[in-house]
Image 1 (cartoon, rainbow, N blue to C red):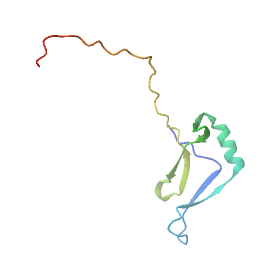
Image 2: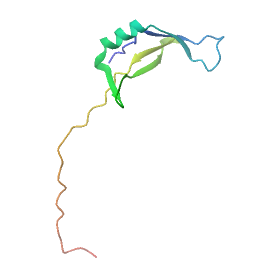
Image 3: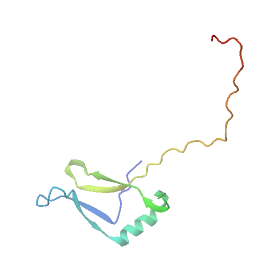
Image 4: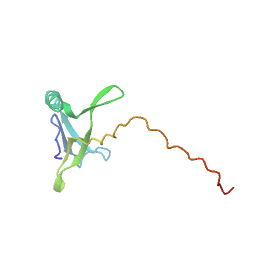
Length: 97
């Protein structure tokens, strides 16, 4: 599946003049981000009653800067089956003990 690059948040590589604890700098554009999230509602999930979108921060090819994509992975749902009865235990008198 192709990556869906997040719109409304742009990341830039760390500058040499920035301290070591800085990984990247960025710009957030609320109108662009809100429009993007509305357009990609099918990737919305929920955690503890709060709506959320899972993301990944990736490194650009050949020294390119970092960028953000939606994490669109969905675990396969386990098949739902009704309760199953345990197999009956056969009674036998030829036990070795």
